[in-house]
Image (cartoon, rainbow, N blue to C red; front, side):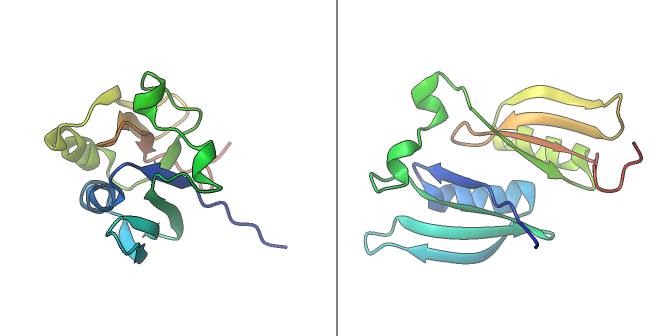
Length: 137
């Protein structure tokens, strides 16, 4: 049996978040389903052979259990790690976008080079060149 994990996120302005994630991290739009009012009901963004799903926050069955980092003093209970080929390039793009770097870019003792940042709505992301699938333990 094959299993795939796809992180799901909610944003106050998912349309803007989609553009930021594509421009800064390099995601590509796989599918975007807008509501009648123009908000995003559901979107799928791919990066390599990985994907995230996201949409605008709402008071639906799933949305009732999701909160935004701004509502809990900038905290998160989880974050996504993106394996990238050039962490320095994306680090510079994040800085240029005006978003906060939480952990500066550095070479990791276990291999790879990476950093941790917030996106435009405060979600925490870690990015780096360390790939646990191909690194030797």
